[in-house]
Length: 218
Ligand code: TMP
Image (cartoon, rainbow, N blue to C red; front, side):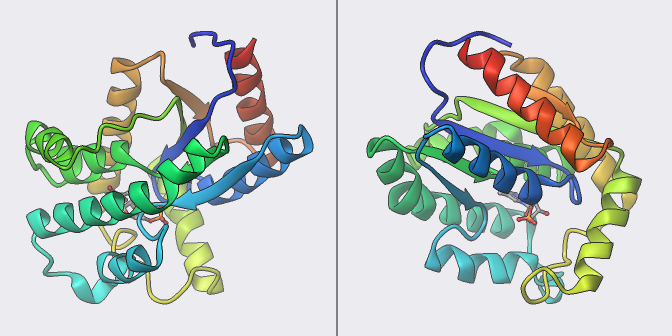
């Protein structure tokens, strides 16, 4: 990882289903607030009121016949609204923004896994002027079998709003492509990505994240 003097402002969390992003993002936010940093937690899809409606379409298993191109455009619509309404205003006001998924998820899920052309995705981002880049991306990496086991356990507990299992219902091969896609992106951009071992317990994952950010700031 590269070392930076200034505090990291825009931090994204990525990973396959069940990697523990939601838990870890909350823990990091508490840690940063204890250190006196102002930060907010947000997510994609669904970081705005409009985005919540888009999220419901995207994650509903009843949207099984959604065309990959339509899926892509819905994620981009969610992101355009999210950047304008949440991410940019909070960054401008001097807050750290902790975001559960961002642009890399589109490259991986719609690009690597669904097979849409990655240069089409990049072009669409450019056309929409979505040139915002995270300062650091924490990739929570674990085996898809374990991730899916955890994700289904959460869904069955009813801890996720509504019916959001469309991606969990994808094949293991799909999730393996997602994981491989993320690792490829991390390899291509080692200065931005930090790969965190998410196979270990919650506390150990949290400690890896804190250590990474501390090193980044030193
Ligand atoms: P999550 O909020 O529980 O992580 O679920 C979001 C789902 O949406 C997850 O399966 C990954 C998927 N996704 C995409 O396919 N493309 C994207 O651009 C984003 C942000 C998420």
